Amino acid sequence: MLNVLIRSALLSDVESLAGLCFALWPESSREEHASELAALLEKRVTPLMPLVHFVAETGDGHLVGFLEADLRSHADCCDASHAVGYVEGWYVEESRRRQGIGRQLLAVAEEWAREQGCVEMASDALIENELSQRAHAATGYQVVARSVLYRKPL
Ligand SMILES: CC(C)(COP(=O)(O)OP(=O)(O)OC[C@H]1O[C@@H](n2cnc3c(N)ncnc32)[C@H](O)[C@@H]1OP(=O)(O)O)[C@@H](O)C(=O)NCCC(=O)NCCS
Image (tube, rainbow, N blue to C red; front, side, top):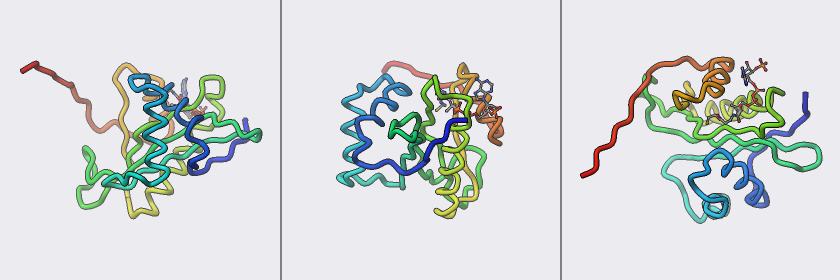
């Protein structure tokens, strides 16, 4: 198993972290991710709800994964009387998968959510992303709903 340090992202991580975000969310460019991350990490923008990035760093200082989590005022099938910790993004480099890094990132994010007073953590996965669904199931997440997204041009 690869030994990694899970820690909060720093401003100096912006370029590496933007590369990982781009791998997960290629619909925005690497530059757009870097600019958004820099604004957040420099605290030039403050999201309405707390939002954090945790990174997995190898001994040689290479970032191999990240998890973006925030708080949502409510999430499907969760107790509406508490804010809910939410996994917005979860990614580990392909060559580093199945070594427990995803699990470690999630555990740190769940601990962060507990510290924020949350009693539940929620997440989502695309229906075709079976890998993500297997990883969620293996880490204790239950399917609570499935939805269909619609669009109609006006
Ligand atoms: C989901 C993801 C972050 C998991 O990272 P990871 O470091 O491989 O996760 P772990 O090694 O901690 O695995 C946790 C558990 O998930 C399950 N799992 C993970 N990958 C799996 C696979 N390919 N097949 C079956 N089960 C799998 C296993 O039960 C695993 O535990 P085990 O290895 O002890 O059996 C990683 O696969 C990934 O980046 N996927 C692409 C991006 C993505 O889909 N992200 C989630 C949507 S936001």
